[in-house]
Length: 229
Image 1: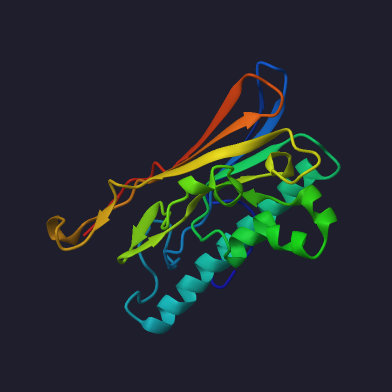
Image 2 (image 1 turned 180 degrees about the vertical axis):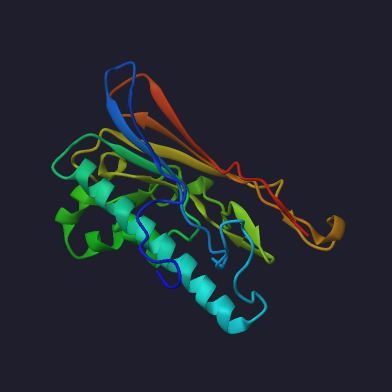
């Protein structure tokens, strides 16, 4: 890592749990909060900057550090996903703040959804965006977002599911009925005091297990509210 040396751990370690429904279905769940796009400037042990943050060349290198860190975290997470899914029929849900768009290189490092187009066998270890495979297509919003940055809406908070939730999978155990983004409270602009940015979106998916009367609700919530003057 430029200026940092060997990087061996997540900045925010993922949470991995196994849940059991009332009907006895085991569901693997991972909750993540990956490295942000904010530039990673060098600092000393007391947190004081050791480089000129106003230098655009320094800022470019700091932004590269963040990208490399997030990419490394995504690669490590991908290894965990493959270990869980390979030749297994236990469904997996990976949800949280990916700090990048659903089809970005870093998110696809984790999901590998694009590989399915070339090799259907890749479904065994692929993840699918719950928003894109939800059953009630009419409920999809024209603009789904969970964050606003510099006036642009972004989808950073996501729910990815294994093929056991895909409607076209022969190994389907359930389906994604509905995905909602709760973002009406997000704002950024001159109308806010001192041009404040408020970020606290929520992405929520609701699914039903096939052939059962019970339903299972899954929520992914971005709780890192902050204000930027």
